Amino acid sequence: MTDDDVPSTIDLRSPVDAAEWARTAMAKRPWRADMFAHIAEQLAGRTRVLELGSGPGFLAAHLLGRLALDYVALDFSAAMHELARARLGAAAARVTFVERDFLDPSWPNGLGPFDAVVTMQAVHELRHKSRAAALHAQVRGLVPGGVYLVCDHVLGELTNESLYMTEAEQLAALRAGGFADVKLVARVHGLGLVAATA
Image 1 (cartoon, one colour):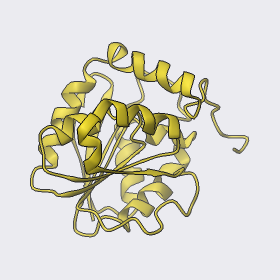
Image 2 (cartoon, rainbow, N blue to C red):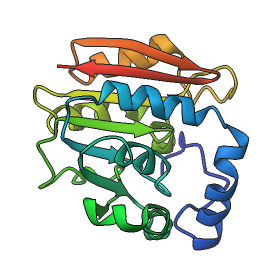
Image 3 (spheres, helix red, strand yellow):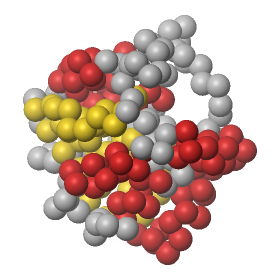
């Protein structure tokens, strides 16, 4: 953490905090399910997918229920992986669970390549938006010829300007990370979904 970092109010590595987040997430933002559907549409024809910040498995459950995917779920929280395994049930056998922190520069080692990388409400967990371009550059190396789908809060509904970006800032961070073609493909309430290709 640096002086510019925005501290989190919860510890997602804690089983108690992880379970509470998972219990309330869909109730607070039920439109997340609409965004899951948009992500599934973007993944049509893809087979090997990495989810960054996979959490308790909400997005994985939606995608694995609809698409034939070789799925890698990466999260820094063992507690979140346990919640995801429970949520996915038998489908968990189709998932490789990787416990890594994408604040650690070595997190991509040995993972790629993928047809698609997707992240849902996780980029702001970098704890400062200034780190987003570096994360995107790392992802670019994992998804040659594929697509990177980034869904996060757009500055507005949530107002911390150090964590959350405007749509223009999100697109600029992806371009700075080496993605040439970036476009907003869906907007649902305060969530925006950007598709990026190199």
